[in-house]
Length: 395
Ligand SMILES: *Cc1c(COP(=O)(O)O)cnc(C)c1O
Image 1: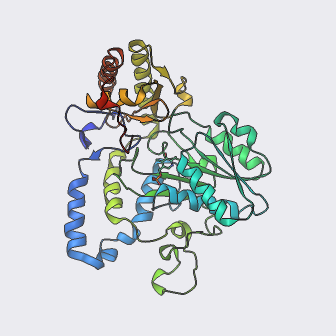
Image 2: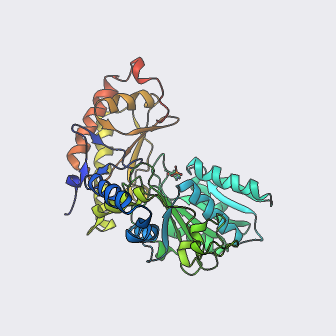
Image 3: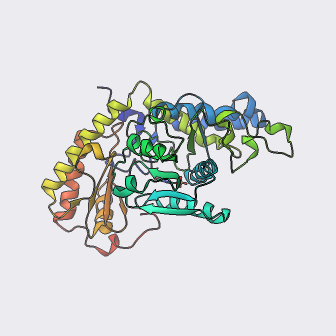
């Protein structure tokens, strides 16, 4: 077994980090690589770094590395912007492919920014489109011939509930609609086979399970047979066929490059490129098997120790991503008290205590240790102090 690869990460002493689903930890190799990028590239090369250090090629080159983890063929993934922006690009491109249809379908388990961005776009268009939401378990039934595009996040950010990508995509295609998968909590967490499921679009972020650091860019995948006909709604100069021709007219670039918008975040992509080294030689199936093991142990330990917590995640590992959530009415202060004792999870309104499991740097003994600390906090009501009850800006 190749796991865990703990020595590759900086993990503060005494901390058990169960929040890699929100922000991955710092890979040890990143500070040195970034320092050299700053000194030797920005410092010494200045503007010539775009060519000499090949900064201009980063979004596609490193995009391909991400693509390797989600079953995307070379040349079908590019990095840039934030995931919210990529949602906008994907929805805009998808509805243009089905001009006769006016419904974009998503579900109530989706992350709010995906819904806000889609709704904002549809309102701007003023073309009669509507964003329709189904309950996650009712999505299959809501897919019909009125639907132009279906946009879903595979792993529910609150509960970890997993959508069946292959079955849903097949249904979407059977009614002639276009599929967009958000892989925010999937990339680096569960095996994904974009090519196999044949989705038109996929998007996701790189600061969660891929450890690219706060503000790391998002990615977008477009199915290779469609890319030359997709019209980029965000027609930025770096998605132009010839940015340095400075033409007054926009002509979309070749292939996936057209989904670029403006200047790429070079420092962030450099950090991500280094962070991705942690995956070298690993298969996602190996990660998945280990993640299931860790989640199963966590559920059984917490349920035995803390009868007042109720499982919010699906019990069957086949229906769950790489996180485990519990309902607890005092979840916010309880999580603050747990964090104060060195176990880092997070809280999602209204009552969800969420813990992410990342086999690259979490092992079985961490899980058991974490469960003991949670037991102490919950069973002895250690959360019941004013200092744990004031809400911070980020929960
Ligand atoms: C984390 C997450 C986001 C975050 O979007 P940003 O624009 O990167 O802040 C969006 N959608 C989903 C489903 C997420 O899980």
